[in-house]
Amino acid sequence: MDSTQHDGFMSGYSDSFIRTIIYTIGHMLIAIACIIFITGADIKLATVDAIVEPMINALWYYVLDYLWSWFAKS
Image 1: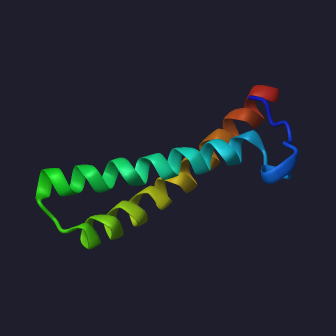
Image 2 (image 1 turned 90 degrees about the vertical axis):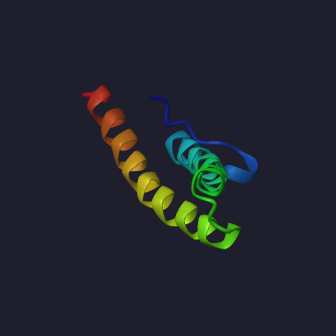
Image 3 (image 1 turned 180 degrees about the vertical axis):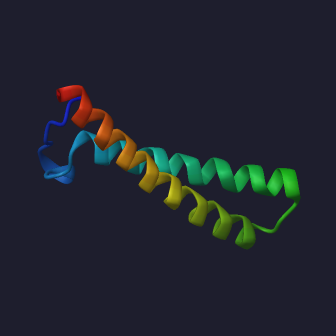
């Protein structure tokens, strides 16, 4: 994977980190919608669940992507 640096707003962050942030935001929005439609939970409860679970997944994805890139270079 490419780990180039960006100029401007996201300067100093690797591609892996940027992908992780974008993935996490999308995951949260999808999770809120699913929780509301499947369980009928109110938006506050759905939002709390949709924030906690993806944050754990985001950490896992970042570690996985970092290790994948590291092993690919080896």
